[in-house]
Image (cartoon, rainbow, N blue to C red):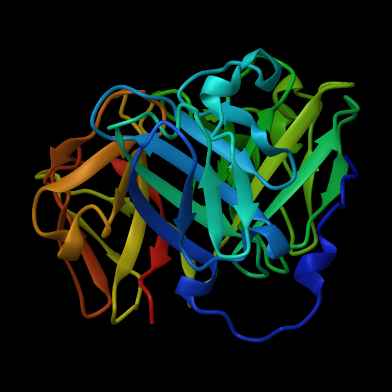
Length: 329
């Protein structure tokens, strides 16, 4: 597949976008057959990612996107190659002009409950790039985000390997990373990003096989840091485990991905959203990107009002990175 396939979809037009135009959390119960999930996003025309997770029992984190196709799944809770994953790790359906469909797959098991987070490709919000590695340090990869990425997630497709995560709030981010499939903290590796920060037009790869092995296929998911729509930030908890994020959104956030950067304490990647926890009412329903475990409840968000998200129950004196999506306007 061409490196730039679909990028032109991001380049035409510059009309302001709203959160509900590019992001949606969908909740559904599997029927074991075929099911259409209507979320209002034009995934067929604009492209995007659907990340789905079973809630009530153990199940994989399923990642399917419009560049790799709906039947080519990856799972963020392990290091398995795309080529080793059967139809049970895909949603086996299609991308639609107003959502997506699920087939008889791991994303639609009869009687199971699911959450699915859809990210539509759009400038200053989200982009997807596919490429073939060449093993050369300093390789510049073009993207269509139209903004400096706040977070990047890169995964080999035909190689067993970890999910590498760049985040703008990590210490010296151009030479540090986290791993989406693991609970460990940030580690340094110049070979990943070639000690070069990304720009609004490209990101730079080192020679590491995790991001640029010669002949290996890769997919890169790029999230903007756009204060009006999506923010990639950090928060340091006090000794009591409380902290706050000043995002400035009067209507608050609708989705949060949170991870400790500590190299001493292992902590999971937490996914929280207001579809499963309306109003952040006190015991948020948590799923974990690095785990197949069922949903559980955690007292994490104390409040999200007047432009400030107040967090609790974090590790004392630890720093966390977060990716927040603004609530619908």
